[in-house]
Length: 109
Ligand SMILES: [Zn+2]
Image (cartoon, rainbow, N blue to C red):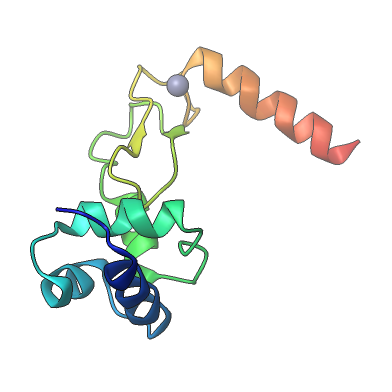
């Protein structure tokens, strides 16, 4: 499936109307929800507030003891969590705890 200018315009207007990625995929036809999300992200359309985005963020957290550091951007097809073993009483693995604390220190400075 090819993103012609026409389809990109359709995607943009449907996205701006607040349609969900799966609705847009249905309306455009011959395209998957993930392809719509990926394209929208590349077009810089992914900044609208989306309840679906928040849901996607929480869904993969099946195991509390996995590192919950997000890899990539929520809403993108390849978005995932680090999923190494988390440190005791921490949401992240050793490596990402170090990153999280460094970020905190930087933002406080
Ligand atoms: Zn991690």
